[in-house]
Image 1 (cartoon, rainbow, N blue to C red):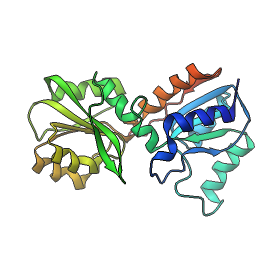
Image 2 (cartoon, helix red, strand yellow; image 1 turned 90 degrees about the vertical axis):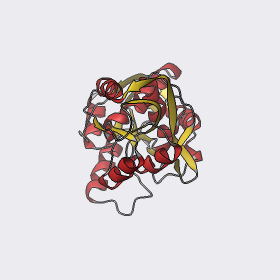
Image 3 (cartoon, helix red, strand yellow; image 1 turned 135 degrees about the vertical axis):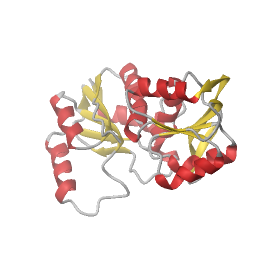
Length: 251
């Protein structure tokens, strides 16, 4: 069992939550029990993960996508139901959005590179003056098809490849989730392959005209890596039990 504020203080510092401009209100969004014995981890804060966390006897839920974005204007409807459930069951909710994308060790983008047996090379994916993603480079060129297969297997998901560049690549840039707009930066930096979660219609021709390969591995799937990696850090740091809630959207 561990003290809630000890866990929150560690997470705030480790993830550097105050260093990133973010619409998400990162940190402890809803306060529940003061003593934590069991923590659930998930990508999304939603009724499904709340209910499964409670069913798993969790005292705390740590997510990538929280429930407070900018602020709360009214406590009614969906907002009221979510807050009522969390408060009635004293379930703590902690969210880490961009800080978990950008973290050089447990972040979604660093973990995507790790999945491909690469280390973060240079910052990538500028957002309001900070960088969220990374670039990486293979020692020897790799076929795009092989990289796509490795992502599909490692993330247990379907991927889509848009092959507008060479069949083999060395340099890549990664931007998890809805990172499609970073295609402009990827083209400018001349990388061979851009990996993201969602690749939007509006960016298709940018990639095509820029002669760059793109792999879209799913918003949800590319953002399971950060919470899973963070789960192992928390498990090693505190006397708590942990478990991951897999609630894929297929998107």
